[in-house]
Amino acid sequence: MILCDIGNTYIHFCDTYKIWKNLPDEINKKELSSDVYYISVNSINEKKLLKAHKNSYNIASIVNLDTPYVGLGIDRKAACLGVENGVIIDAGSAITVDVMDAGNHLGGIILPGLAAYTQAYRSISPALEKRINFGMDFDELPLNTQSAISYGAIKSVVLTIKEIVGDKKAYFTGGDGKFLAKFFEKAIYSEMLVFNGMQISIDKALKKHKEQK
Image (cartoon, rainbow, N blue to C red; front, side, top):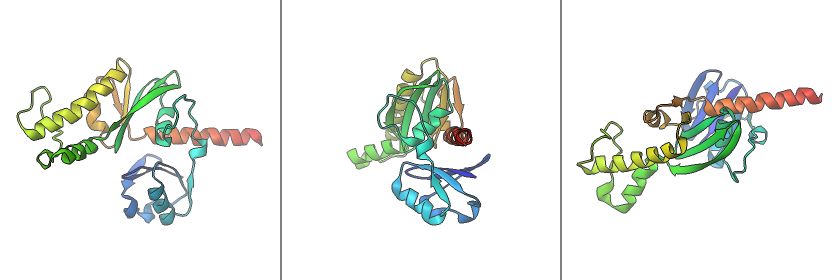
């Protein structure tokens, strides 16, 4: 059984403890040697998976999280299911921040992903078309445009997340998750967060099915 998380940029796969990702148009069919169970936030990329591997099944209907939040994404639900207490930060195309307390989802926020900040600056002026410098010193005030943009983008994200995290544990995942985790004392980075939630959902569904027999 292969688990699959279909995002807006990449399609992520997990086969036991092996994790890899493909661009939607570059799915390696040879690696998909068994049935694929997936969740998706992008219908176009979902169709590309189904075209590459017919034995793929959407498990969104069994990924259940009790929450008052209206419209919570399926990937956020899965990530939250594996955390009883703490704040879950999924830093991908967008950065989502969700709070779990005693197994209850209290709510969350959505920020632009770090790559989206560069696009936003570019739309303001060609002079602001600079890559984010992830290696800069954030303890010093910037003295050039690239550093100023990098500082503004990263600090705005970090400080917002810190306001929500407080003294809780912070669980990071996603492409920029490992980088952002460096700014937090009680930080745990795991590529398995979403997959763990998917596996929990599958196990619960199988148990319920057996009990109903």
